[in-house]
Image (tube, helix red, strand yellow):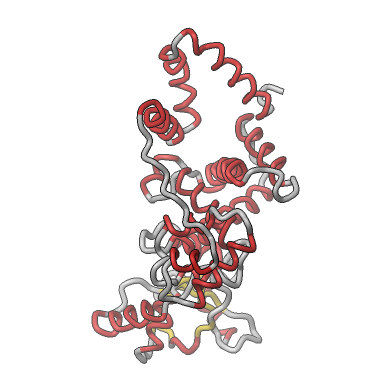
Length: 333
């Protein structure tokens, strides 16, 4: 049957009507919610299927002719309600299944924070791998950003602050996205993948997914914490890895427990909400946040205007900060 499936892929493009039982489920990036699958299956049974799943032909020795690429909840939902067929689109057998799943899901607003972080991490890894296979020209700024990330990531764990690592990795990811996918800041923001959102996703992945590959899906589906980005960031802020793991395990084992209850049970202090910024701090935060949203070209164009707004007494401090940053980035060498 797998051979027949491969022949179909050669004329891919049309929507195929497949039996759900002819589709294998391989490695997945996201978490699985049985109640969501049941609801989607019921909707498909009542109103028909609107969005096809994505499949690829399985290998000749596989137990079924097709393997799922994207649409896990739709497929399981179809099985739960007993649908005889499900609409599917086939992709080439050599396609990167995890990357396709990531690209389909990352920009969906319904994704939980950890699922989205998993998808964005997969897209970033795919872009990094593809860029290494290419030999396109990079600008001096892009080369400096990549060199900065290479230097920081090569250091032993704990040498660099997590915030600095996330900042460097996010900038490196922006370079990769721009080069590989033609990523533009204004388009990225429109689909919810601005550099700031990517930075947050990578930070969650670094703190809660990468260290706990067997736990994070349970955390992602936790009823009170899984979709609470603020609570997840509180967990990620726990410096001690053992305490962080114990907290996640406690939450996964007890779905009806709140984060505060889990932290109290382990003798961990609940993170205090930071005070709302006021005065100069408020203005500074707004300024740096707005600047971060601009592309490198836009920042370069407004640089003279920024200098004009600086008070004379602050110019020497600005020059010293610029010299230090230029030295750190290796620009002009």
